[in-house]
Image (tube, rainbow, N blue to C red; front, side):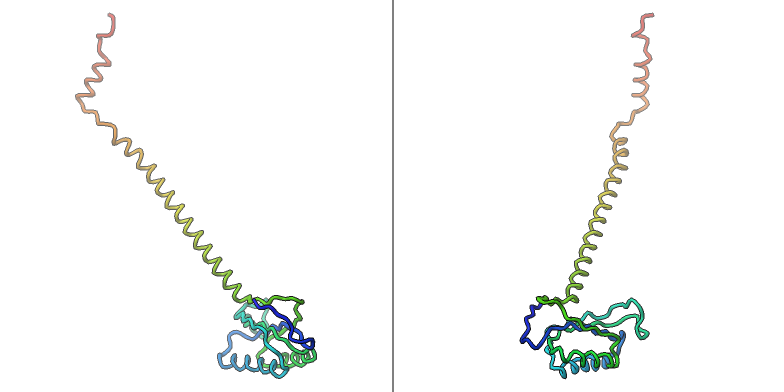
Length: 182
């Protein structure tokens, strides 16, 4: 996060978004970025912050490209030079689109590229936690199910087996005539 205060009354802060094709050869990309920096240097712009967003998908194809690299520049420059910068970016080979915006007063400049990385890492950690919790629940359910299946088998084993002689003795006791008054 960068706090911005103007260096003089003759300059203003501008947010300049530049899109260029993806994929682009490394040499061509370096030349394009050098040309963009040259345009700002010619206008005597002072770079406050540069936020490289990298590769992003486009809502619709621009110049046959479905994806583009995004760079957001925060430049402090004289408003009279703005038209020249706009015109030079418009004709610069390799720039798909650009947009120049005057941000509101008191803007705190933040790196959205870093914020996105942090958000993705947080989401990844939350997913990993959720998956491990689900695995633990499933393990517990499996253990409980195994215990329930093992309980009836253990109950059957606890009863002593009745031998043939003991069974005959119990049957004789139940059937005996001694208790009957006949």
